Image (tube, helix red, strand yellow):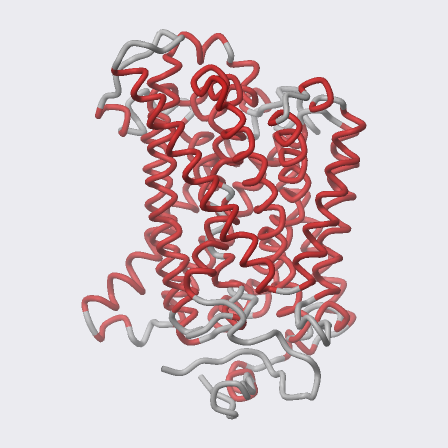
Length: 506
């Protein structure tokens, strides 16, 4: 097995190899998706859009995720670069696609960190029954910024420290969610629920059972729900058995997630019933909080705490892909060299990590002041960016391995057909979402921005900004764009003294 990354044999500090193992990578992949936070954030919108077919949407969203995870696994076997999509797409499709793919990854982290930290702060207060303080806008903003700064410091402090913290947090939140699901379903089948509960049906697993209306919006939320598992692969340079473990961790993350999401979504729909969900349609961000409180009784704090710790964990792990992508881009001269700086003691990308935090804080504060609902529209806009760079990665996989596709049925299906189908599904979703959000009435905030839905405006703004930055850097330093494939393949060498003391080539 061959592997390759960017040139690093220059005497500078490098990322710490073998800092974490397979289980740590799996946990970080799960933590990055923030299961408890995600459920709390999207369950209301999901049932608002698709009703009792919300479980089907979660199942349908899983398919392209699994297929793209396969692409991540195979691409990582030949190129263990912490920039993942940026590095792979550059090699397969050229520097322009590679750069904008890297930009999309970095921006998803920047856009979501503020929302994650806010939920961590709010649900921590709710855990202790401090509801008035939990909805004090000034206090929440202050606490959110503090959370971002603390989690960023932990990221810089070291990958091992991050992994140990995540091991505790992820187990707690997954067990809490499954406990809620079990208690809720017991109440449903014993007719002890406080709501007009309904018996689960296999028909709920059909995402199109209620018609096409709301399916696109629901799938976009579903894609957001699974997003983050690839963080395990962004740590490839710091993981033992780097050509295999990160990719396997990413695939297993998606499997654990679909089981968790299906359990909780079915429990929520069955427990609350259509009547309650319809009545609380305008308060979808609070649905999970209300259901957990009524279902768990005096133990509701467990679910509240799990949401808080989930968001806290994801605040930290979401910074990882953005910072590692910035590092990778800087090493290839696609960004200023300062973003490639690695802390000589902690051996983490400290500069790019703090930049991610700084931009995330600025975005959170500005957008939060402009609109109370803009952060929720940002979650939807994230789906556009995620669908884009996942689709790009799937296509890059088929292109990169094009000479190997016919070598066996396994290669044809898992390296070619699977990733391409996953990409096509995501491209269809992306186009459908663009059409849907051209109409402001389909957005969370029905007030139009420039005549369009806010999520679409946010998405276009991010891409437009990326194109501007890319163009400016192209005229400032063209070395990344002038890199010829043959030259790049020959110079992508990594010295790994802890393993064999020799560089490896693709």
